[in-house]
Length: 362
Image (cartoon, rainbow, N blue to C red; front, side, top):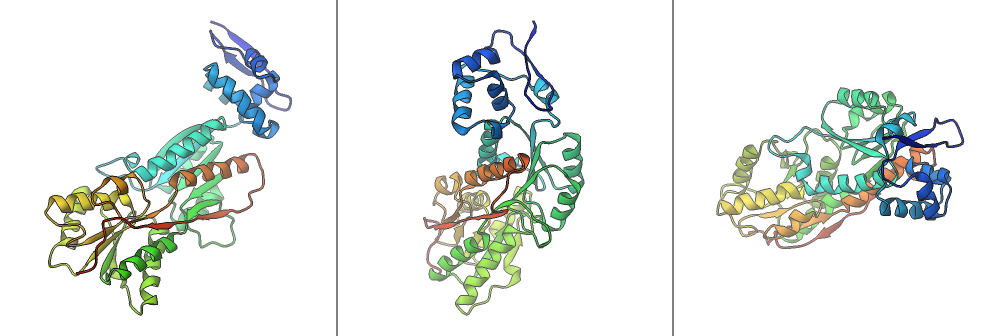
């Protein structure tokens, strides 16, 4: 065994030493791509500002063809950071499932992982509801960048002021207008408005909004507020007690579903802020002999694969969760490279998808 190819990149960084074995050396990859070894090194180390998009794609094609695997330890030693992008989902872990079982979360994470990998970085994933843990992780790992998902408004500034690492939020809300927060969000209020307006057109004036994450004070309240706006347009009022955060324990959720859907319940529609729980409720209630939408109508939010596979198929609000993940990493890479970001707080569009889980109110 031996170490080969000491690659020097003009500037201030130390050389990168790579263990080769039988793999192609950087020089051979450079020859096949028709570029210099320095260009190959820049692609490997994510110095994309020094390489054109066309050249980067050409080099990456050769790297994939040659099945080149860079030495992680050498790459970390060659940089002042760890080459790791931290992705922290700020939520209390579910008791019965992992966060990756929700297609919405896995779609975002899958899109982010690919974008991170294409930029020559690596992913560290963590789920927590402890702001101190976020600060400890970001410092201990010397992260190159950090993506925080669903961070409550009251601690966004604390984290931003404490961490020097380039930082992008996903689906977070901010009341502090003095700070610039980089965020990829959604037209949440519009989504709630669209779903409530449709339910009202089907005669549903007695609905209950079932919130996903009680720790998250942004998206769910905005969606509920959109429902209230739709009611107000019809001269109706949607009371605040129609907003119910879902328990984290599945058996407790199932008890709640049964209570809300039985014959003595005043509600005619269950409005979920996530397809994951809407699909769970539809399956459970039908197993209990409660017809959907015959006895009660159900709507979701996200338009993930559960919305299309469950029967009846869910009427829901569509969002492109993969695009949300991609845009978050693209924004983060601009911050890492100290490039300008045109729009700091992006709000992605939504649309109503009408399917089979809503009937006319009884």
